[in-house]
Length: 261
Image 1 (cartoon, rainbow, N blue to C red):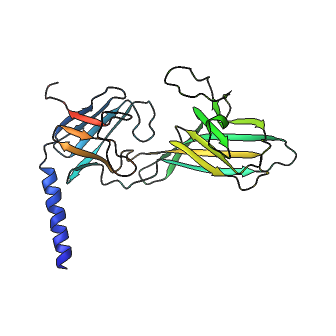
Image 2: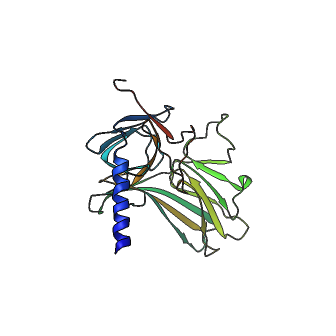
């Protein structure tokens, strides 16, 4: 019992100590692309605006309001909202007898949930740009599916052979090798994943990628590291550590703006 009381006392002191930090004000990232601005109000509310979506890493205007708190050196946005998945996927395979071609279907499904967690709407759209490869993830084995041809420039990197189409389903010749898996990578999936093919005779493969939008907030238990009252780090890595450099893939360093600026 004494240990529990000691822990609770330490926890309360930690929170109170954190709340004495004067983070009230407006912070913005050093580099303006994408632009990120967070305003912290004295009533423990925040206003978040960005030119990129914070959970889907898409170039689209985004704004949201919520509550903030501080525990030790960590500032937490919307701590009252439970964590929920933003990106999910499922993979299906089918064998169609007598069809020598291989069909690949790629769906991006935007799902909208109300405050009670009920699905209210779902829109199926085409994936902007997708790379796939069978059995091995190697550059020479990649094929890209895209609605418009990729622009070649110094920042484009290696551009694999492209299939230009506005259709969600494409028909290709079935590889001569035994199908064991397919690697698929795109922004909507937030990386590249390997999907195992259980039946090597399958000739219709379908990937559904779900982007989940929550009415009660997309910013859920988002953490920012407090360097001092004028500098915050906003990009937390998968290992829990924060990026403290000036690289701003989604805005790493936030600096407090001067009053009246």
